[in-house]
Length: 353
Image 1 (cartoon, rainbow, N blue to C red):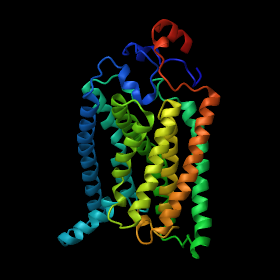
Image 2 (tube, one colour; image 1 turned 120 degrees about the vertical axis):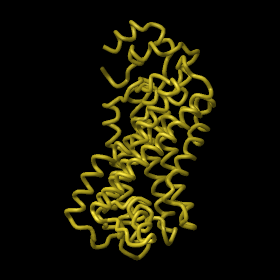
Image 3 (tube, rainbow, N blue to C red; image 1 turned 90 degrees about the horizontal axis):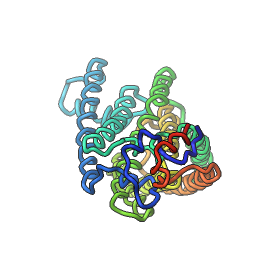
Image 4 (cartoon, helix red, strand yellow; image 1 turned 30 degrees about the vertical axis):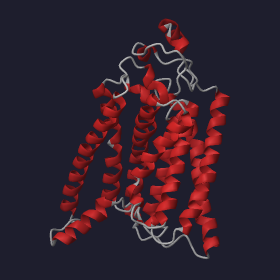
């Protein structure tokens, strides 16, 4: 079976209704017989409630582990609050417990999103993945290469070019012990792809399809779904002028992720970009070579480096969008759900064998 299949699998087809026109990924909910205009909104609310419950459980487990390890000591109330904030208020990539709880907490978005769809009856939940109603693994694997290339390019520019522009050094002597770094690195490499996929299922999947079920213009749906994604990155709040460029940087990522999802007919390309970007970023933080291991410290102080980082993001993310769009067209990747193909389930199953 190739990645550029013409129709969804037969098991998914039985749950679909014939639609009058080909549907892109962001409009796929319109193909579900159980679709009603209010269901995506209810699914979103349920997902948020479930995610809060799941993350609360994860944080409680993290607190118990921290107490057992002596990272939280019950001396004074202020001391406990400071210790809780340092561990779980932001992600400390140089602390194995903090990075684990931070990543796993976000990763619980995945089961929360799937349950949100299931509870309101938006089935099959594979509608979130692609117009082929599955993750196209070969295509996802291909997307890892351009994602790695543009991420490494952006990292090298910030490490080598920025110091020359700012008359300083971007790298400092590491403060994290090598054993701690290696443990954090294993956690990051294993958990970050799941965390990134969870965000893509929630934002490029659920939220984008919610807007897409109500609105037709692709550009409007992509922009609207980018807003909550940028707002959700609360580590950039409270940093004055630096907030503008840090949030704009995240918004550029969201726009490109939305664009490649639309153009390729699935969330594989956005998962690849998100997973590689976050993995490299967390590994860099965990090394402490940039002077800090905290996700929030990157946006403090002078906003000029963040402005430069924003310009680099515009360039490299734009390159990724162009690369992926061209590769998808060359491979003939299916980016629409075609009602003509859905009409004959038996023929579709034969064509996919």
